[in-house]
Image (tube, rainbow, N blue to C red):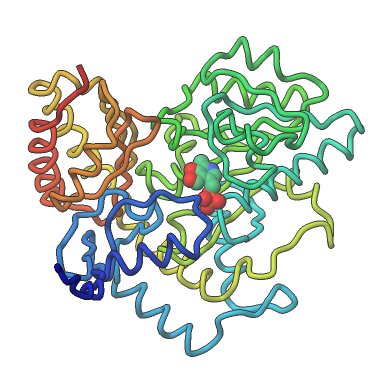
Length: 411
Ligand SMILES: Cc1ncc(COP(=O)(O)O)c(C=O)c1O
């Protein structure tokens, strides 16, 4: 008679152990790539086994100075030994200085600090509401763009122009209208005396790295002035150095100022920090006690952001030059790979539109030591750290050429 041997206890790899814990205990909202990150240095991250990956997505545009930047590491260490949190009951040394810095680079005078992009968007929506309500109870309409992305909170979702993000959470905040990007006639017919705000993602990031045209931005400014509503540029993904300027709206000549610009991701190099930067008119909508944030603008985040801005001043030329080189090398690949439809985006915000879904390329990239992602199904998105060099680009292009050569577009 056959005897059954006791089964070997199953030994899980470190990766499987982590994945199993997450499967068991986390809300199942994320579908992660099969990669367990352990540490980073410069533009590279390493997994637990020490395998190295060139990171061209940098935590979705957050790790602006890469990993373990010596100056950022130093101020984080120093500040951790001094003061991490004060709340906004008290002053600390860095919030006012950071607001002054933002005023100088943005042309807008007043900042409100928070912890994320969505939180900045929520605050801006409250400013829009309060601005409209102060004029008339009917003035509460908000116009934004189809295909936009403004965050996952209910308010931000309400003006996000993609039904897939909204559909499970309706009813949302009322009053939103969506117009197609760059359709000036549609914008003109959507904005009226009851509009309190126009919210534009200056370059749609999640939507596929799609900028708004200069004519459209200027038409929005003119309409906001005519109807006394607030013009908000969401530069949470496309701003703060990424486009090769402090803000993407500064790429226009002459510069066009919004009433509010929103920023977050790259500003504190991985420490959560978001900001609403507004002019006096926008800021006047918020009176004492009307808005707040316990963690927002704490000493650690603000001090790191000040250090980041000191470094960014000198990095802007390189963001432009390396970005241009990257786009040129990607455009060269179009001659060999006809499925590449377009290479677009300013500075180090680059989208490569291809003729088929890009998810498999992203997975193959991980195996080859290259991290990027794919948005809107067919747009490979690159948001690398600002310290990227031409040498890094050469390495990335060599890997991408290999991935493209082996790509199996669906028939
Ligand atoms: C343009 C834009 N707005 C808002 C957000 C939301 O930011 P967060 O994820 O920090 O809440 C994002 C995030 O990707 C974004 O790209």
